[in-house]
Amino acid sequence: RVVVIGGGWAGYAVAESLSTNNTPSRAVEIILLDASKGGGGGLAGGYRDSKARPFEAGIHGFWREYRNTFDVMENRDAFEIDVPQFPQDFWNEDKIRRLIASNLPPPLDLPILAQFDEKSITASTCGNPARLRPIDLLSGLGLLGAWADFEQESPSSWKNYDSQPASLLFEKAGITSKLFEELVSPLLHVLPMCPAYDCSAAACLSCFHVFALQSKGAFDVRWCRGSIGEKIFDPWRHQLEQRGVKFRSGTKVACIKKNSSDQEGDSGDSIIKCDAVVLAVGAVAAGKLASSSPALSSLPSTTNFDQLRGVTCVAVRLFLKPHQIVSENLSGISELNETGFCIYDLQRMHDEFNDDQMAVLEVDFYRADSFVDWDDDKIVQLSLKAISAALNTVCIDTHDIIDSKVLRARKAVSHFAPSSALLSPGTKLEKGMYIAGDWVDRTGHASWSTEKSVVTARQAASALSRDFGLKHSSCQVVPAAKDTPQLSALRRSARVLRAVSPPETLPPSPWVLAKQLMSGMKEP
Image (tube, rainbow, N blue to C red; front, side, top):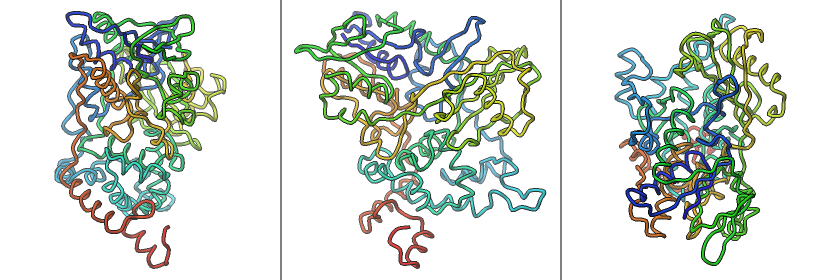
């Protein structure tokens, strides 16, 4: 008997991998405990209100290199969703630009293909200098040294970079303040969801590599055509139930105790005895559970779980009168001090809303601690202000709002602060105790977010299967994309340079190094 704690991507993927042992005979009993009453997707799921309107705790994209995630979704007949192939030319640039970019390795193709807001690259009518000049874009090349030196699946690389903040990384790279404010900072606010000073340099490099730099088109994204809970998790749950997986929704685990022969999970109202436990919860939830569970707190790898941190998110969904389609080109900016946000036009993204009966916008805020406790009306007003500022439109009148919903997720998203990788355990804590999630095994498989959850779920299922002799588990991990030949060459050079003259902290760009030598400084 295996108890899986957590009903998100990691929990379902663990159950998926182990439940293949139950075809045709029942070899393992799997009980999945989900604190959410509705079940299906955890934080990624959602629900419908009394008016049958759907709400989710944020919109979730699926990047091109989510290989294991797509493998889970596509190799199953229970999924009745269309997962289209990526377009050949995602940016729809002219032929000359695409021809040049096609002959450049990533990330050198990105400046050729990238589209910036016109006001970011041209002079204003008042004669002010352009906000992003060619020198600003070229300064981004200063990150090449660190990008080549940091190897995604190398524990020693994580050790070298994880203790340093990303702010030092950009300082040593010598990127201009304009490039940082216009491009780098917004990406930090919506990908690792934290400002540079509070983000690990290792996490920053890993995140940018996985989401944008590791292969051509890495930033291409697929979007679910509706609620992830309904489109993905509901049919997934149905298939798992057919394989004998038992679901207990609205069940919060109080503690885990160890008996002489098996594990014992106390879910508050009842005690479940089992042979193995798989924790598939977020970092903060894992820390709370460890503090109340002798079976966890006694393990060396969980000693500092109380230091794990989370990012607070707020999702606001606005149902508007039909004429409130505000822009053809939606995007996100960083307007608030330490809060990033993205705007989604669900009338274009979700089939349910494409009948022109109403316009539906969603604003997802990340690192929203400063206003998470505001009342709903005040947060809706902030969302309208954010939409107006980001899209340069007149603020939507509150009278045009038919309905709205504010969902709060306090400390629910993993926070990859400096030195946080030191707190990240491997997927096997000991025999009978395993763990999976996007914050687990940070120095392993080069993946992030949903993909990391699925990967560590498969790794945890594999370790459990070896320990208990389960021979028919489906837990093969699809490797991350290989380095391009150009990046491989850069990495070989970086290894030589590190061996000859290892930097005291992070490697500087050539121009920062030259400035450093001329000024007699050891470190900038």
